[in-house]
Amino acid sequence: MTRHGGNIVEQTRVAYHCSSSHLQEDTTVPLETPQSVDDVWESFECILGQRAEDDDNAREDRDEKSPDLTERESSSTSSSSRVCPPPTSISGECETKNTHEIPHLAPAEWPQAPLLFRPKPDGMTSILGIRKEASHTEFLWRPGQNETWYDVLRREYDPTYSKSGEDPVFSEHDEHSVILPINNGMEKPGEALVIDFESPLFRGTMMLRLQGTPGIITEPSDGRQGYFDDKIIRYQVVIRGRFKKEIPFSTIVTGYRFRRPCGKLPPTFVMWAAMKVIHFFAPQLSMKLEKCDRPYMLSPFGSAPRTILVEDADVSPENSDGIMTRELSEPTKAHLSILQRDNPIKDSLERARARKKRMDQSFISKSATPATDPDKLYTFEFLQHLMDYQKFQIDVSQSLHVKLKDILDGQPLQIMAEVATDLDKETSAENELFAFEVWHESLWQAATAKGIQSS
Image 1 (cartoon, rainbow, N blue to C red):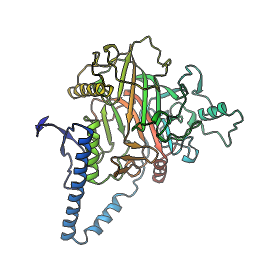
Image 2: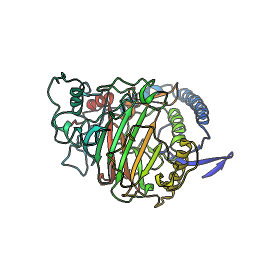
Image 3: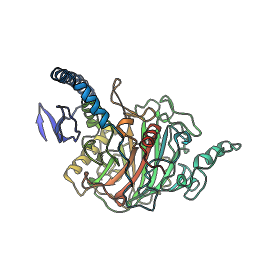
Image 4: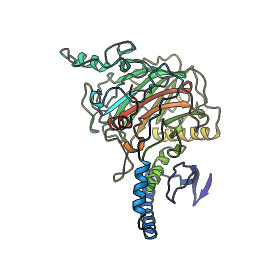
């Protein structure tokens, strides 16, 4: 790192490739570390305005030099956006599992359309059961049960309920591809739906909340009531469980890995602006989106969560005592901290920022410590406010919204974590902590149009 104008400048490698003169292949883009959120927005407005002006000027120069350039560019764009033949097969270590890419059910049959949540079908995250948080042994669904959890739930709250139509095909009941519940923040205490799961490296429970999601037995949250009341966040994931062996946190990452190249990316100045904002919240984000077969956006797992709690082994992961859904805060005591040290900072958010900084430093140095402890119980809370899952767009600012349909090109977003010593190399399924997919109906439609195989 170098210093520039009194601020630390991180030489962050951004592998965003485009034809514009602003960003060339393998360009190292210096991003000043902002001091506050206000600094982020001020920088964002400057970048947005300057990049738009630069692009306009460059376009005018090209038009003057070559009047028919616009026509050629249009032809080139049309050619580059043609549908490529889908892969004939999907390689992976789990050939005996459901390895098809898209859900079998059409969005009209999704219980919480326009969204569908499921484990990654060709991964090694197995679903052990779906239940209410307060029901430690009573499940709404378990592997082999030929009835959906949402039908069980509907009948529980309405004894006269009778499902119409045929049961979904068996693959929708399989522990590797079952449709999973999304909470919307309107749940009563103890009634949030949680998912017990297991992978080669981790066993635990997950709870997902997305603002505005249609409920099975609750009304959608409009942000003015329920969990999302007076919060700027739109997304909450809580994962609680045990690691199966000792793993340095510096080798664990979370984010997105895609099967295929991305589709149409936003204009250069929009990517610059978005990166400036994202860098404030995830300084060690590594991203490759273009000119690679398997794009990714990955961050250190130890610094990504808003809150991390570590508890003694005698605490049962199933007996959460409401921890999955209650307000969490970064611990002050060493025995609850991932860093194993007291944190006297009064504000929980500032304590989290201190932990994030230390975990980022550990990630950069590839330190062997801290490492996961199989004798401890971990709780990770992830919060996010930029993504609107219902509209399926990233709200970079009040005036700039990035639609994801064309970018993802029929590929789902993910909730995942994996052990990866080389980010450019795809890891095997055995290095998976957990892997889930969030589908939007627009992605299913795009994938279907491309001829991608359904389960």
